[in-house]
Image (cartoon, rainbow, N blue to C red; front, side):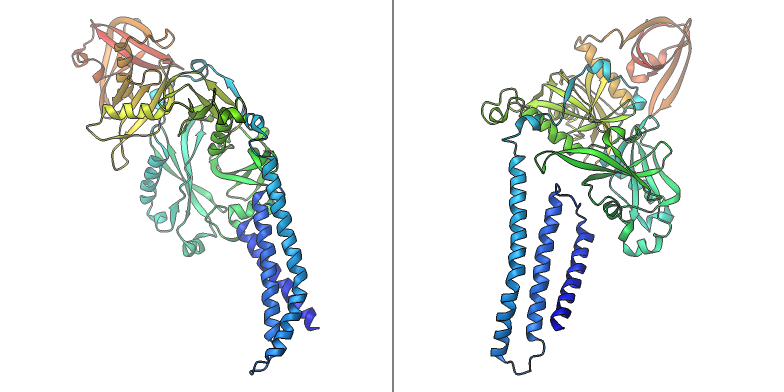
Length: 550
């Protein structure tokens, strides 16, 4: 009877410890998950320790105050003999796990599978000018994650009813929302006590930062966010997902909103294409309504188009490394390195046709000063395009921009790749030592000594176009048109701190907006004067590139 009772105690203690381990570790019950084997090792060791301590406790139970050494020794010997079997079983399980894990890694090694690693991502040759349209200044994203974080903190500080109870989750996912690039992030409970006070209603809002205008909004929700990373128990998003999808291997979980502003968690599911644990890729995603807790799994080809980030940036970059490294096999990647390429140390995002594309340069492993081209990868579909445009590596362009304002000590952000006047162009913000954006810069990809800086995006763009003309860079006919005429109407207004002139010519219904720094004679321009304007037009938006007053 005592043995039976002890066995029940061991089973119950083991069950409690194993459940607690599963509760906190949340491993997928999947033989292809390395995390599952970590949990299995924990489980075996935990059961052996519980059995060992239970047996030691039973040895001393019932002994007198004056210890009977002979009796205790006899009990230990009996318990040790009985304990041999579970130890052997436990060690056997651990040995099998170790061998299985070792074999799984060996058969997926890059040495044996170089061509398969190379094929994890497929690149198509693209035409940058044809596929990446020139965008107007109102569409150029000027907010990076660090700036978005500062703007979000400022906005939350203005909300006296929220700032004492909630903090901001530093996610700031970049998405396209109703045709505009924005960053979104939810709030989180300040601490456990504040969670206890507010968890019934949930998290009441999320932050949205417009990346072009820097407008920051706190979007209040009629029904609060009930599932998040700052929740406890079964409303914790990772725990909820694990118990609903016990066999799925989850990667990153990003925060997004649909076209109606409803908050969702997008949990990408990982699958391995090589061996047992190698060749990490995305097989699909679970879309989880952060308010209701409803969720649905989609294969990667069926993910709704409003979702922007299914593929993790780090995973895409790693696949690009493999693609460039193993173009001619494993041996060539070590010896000779003929044709071996690699992505540059940095990336950014570009909004194209309501999708978010990851941008990074591609450079030779033997060169660190220039790019042989660059790639764009759709983070929803993993469609990848390669553009063979040799030019400056991003950090060289950043240094070139910083050189223009070296007396101010500003530092450049990692650039965004844009089409400006049908030329691949780096755009970056210039920040002071406090991390505040002070100026902007455009740098030509192919001739990175051509730099245009300014206090506004438009001013820096105008200066950049002027530098292109000074260097006799030929702009395409599509990018630039010319019109001559007599001034019919002219008005001035201050926009973003700069004086702008709104000009209408006779025999033309177009309105041209010209900044004062484009021509020193603009303040003296009157109705009846004859002028010539060089401009570009995209989707009805007119951008003036130059003005000559006759």
